Image: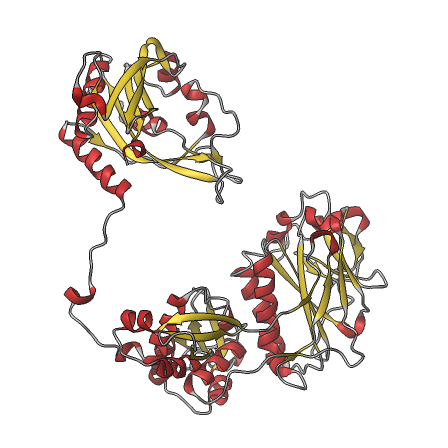
Length: 593
């Protein structure tokens, strides 16, 4: 979890009283955060004031700065009401425009922004403003890969602004805190060894175009996600701040925008007011006014909250508790079991009623919740059918004298295809975009590489070796939302001085008998009418010619091939450095669900 360091005296001043370390630790616990360290009694560099280091839940982006912590604790303590954030147009009524060009779809397609008018910075506020950007870059923005923030002194630049994507050589400006003008390529070389910015260069370095934001006079405001221009840098004297945010993720760009403006609109001449801007993006239908600070309306069930917390609260009592956590809530007119909840723009972490229930528990007090004997609240989860079937197959194989192994689910591309004499059609395996080693390039589509590598690493062990695995493989599936699917497979491998083909076949018969699938011998047998299996000769380069078979099943009148078994081809053995014959079996057990 991220740790935020705040000035102890300043925070206690905002909270209206002094706390001992123990008292503040208890307050943090009650609110759902954790006091990690109080530096009061420690040696501090440069006589810096005592600090409180507070651990924040990773999804509470509104607590990543001093302003957010002070505000939320004051609301929790009942000292302040949650602010009413308002969008206020400029005096002339004409919003600043940020025009998005179509070429940006090639690099960072989304952009958002806002303006903080008549803001007053001092040293502490300025440092907190910069620190919040850094925390968001590290946390939600995933080291600027998903989102990057640029802040500018609006009085030094002039709208309308344009967001474009241009070849590196066509972009030239003076980077922040520098004196020499650089183009895009020179900038990459200049910051290549920089310990702060060098780690972000890879995000756009290999792209044929770089994203860039210009003002109306073609002054470069920023080259996201790397650096801002020196021309528009903000200082302690800045009064009007233009915030622009570029991203790969439509949802995250708006979350970051809301957090930035809600936290620091506190310091504007009219607190909690934000000037919106108009995003003009006609090519993808993203033209809109940002930010949208209207609360999200949702509902939560009173019975669900009471059941989870073991309480008997009325809708009115729950609504009152939720105000301590920055919500606006009231009993629903539609049902006595519902409350209508307005989620503030700062709470991107609230996704469904379980999150609301958790906040009710925090507001009520975790230590105040009724304690009940485990027999009342503790339950044993019911296993998923696929896991229950897996355990049955695992038990049968183990009782038959086979040893279970658990190799890694990632393997090299050659191990999954070439070493098994199989070809990759490009539409089968899920490949890692940036594998750390050659051994972890793809998600396996078969269990055989793991079994064969296990035998290879234990080839000095006495033979025969009989090992099995029941686990998942993965396949590309573009018809699904996540573009992939898992399958639960059962695979075995025999390694010995003889082929062991008949032993593997015998285990297949045993597993099929356990799964109530009768082997079809050609004789009329009433037992085979519902579920049955048979084998057919298989010609596949993985196996020795004439020594392999495919496994067919008929379940509920539907026939399908669920796997294969046979003696591995000598070239496969050579690839895995095995000197004795190996017979393998692999079937998809999901067919039996």
